[in-house]
Length: 517
Picture 1 (cartoon, rainbow, N blue to C red):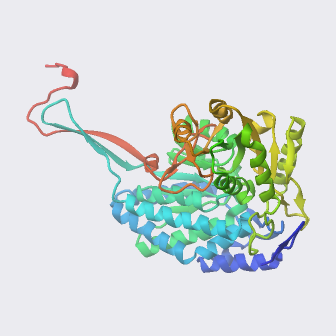
Picture 2 (cartoon, rainbow, N blue to C red):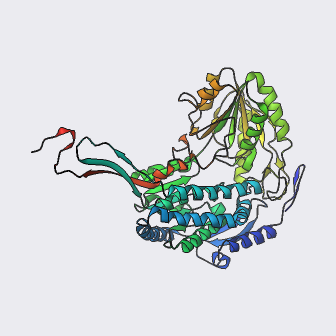
Picture 3 (spheres, helix red, strand yellow):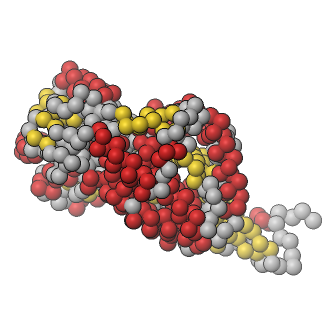
């Protein structure tokens, strides 16, 4: 829609964005008049592109959330007996509709989150990919058969739908995280109640409308996915209701600290995807061309607002100066501006608070011995939008500010001498989501992915920390929460396991040789 020039960001008008949002919603099947009709509880849709409000939309209150849980539970009772391959047809149709409306959903992501067009389209493609994965999974929800110690007996395990899955998603991936959970939950036989981030309600409305259409086309029950756009206080029933046996929550570590004990108190299960303080180790043997490209995308992409954003580089002293110089050179040329503009690579921060947190972190980093070698400034734009220059800060050690996650494009650079030292620095943070090493030395690579290497849930070699594929399970350790979503066997979190023993003999022997005659 516009272009970015040095030092200044030229933006589209809010009216243009409002019209694009309404048109995209309608094409996805959303009744915009009903969405924006007067209601007792309302949420204001806003765009970080210009910093302006778009329009008010209807919101749910606490009673609506409780009603949604009851309605979804009733749908679950019907859905759980449908054969899994048949359930897969609903997800297959959802994938087809997402393919058809890929540009519409991406436009809404760009409007509400500020993602550049390429990244927004990539997020929708991730949704399509997880639908493909889940369709195949619908024919592979397998248990296992084990040998029984008793003759004439068969010992096996089976997996069954668990119930209503509560999904709480964050603003930075307003559609993909929902799809990770929902595609799997639906083929597993569950229903979903979705509380999206208030900052991304329009995207959620579009996705929910596409799901409802897919359900009608597939002949599935209504209300298998119910979106409740509400504030945290009114969504508490998702945490407290025994009819929501699984809660999948993406957000801050602080949010996870509040959710986990509350769900556990009623013996519910949590899938937590929380903070990430992701780092890459760069060794002397690294291909620096590859390293620079991998670091820049991981650190500056999405304006540093990914859970997998690279926040630390731990580089060998012998190559530190060269690497920092090359990174700084690229950072100074990054096209920053309108996410819909051609060639833009870095869009806006989500809001004023994100900008304030970034400025505070940079100030504390310098107080704790850091030196800003590139970026850190704010580009001129509208008064209420926040376009910043991604920053590189060299640090003499790993003080408090580096150990905390700041959801903004700040890359801290630390140095090391021996690989063991680098791994120790890498692991010496509370979070444990994603990690990387850049090396051409196989021993170093194998050490990093071994048990005494990275302590993260995602461990990469010669690629950055962001951009995970849906085929692998996604999640992390420590204060990242321990949850797993998306690929591999993450589906098991959305089901319950039953161990079955079948006696097909004419005797009744007891296990462990017990004699009770």
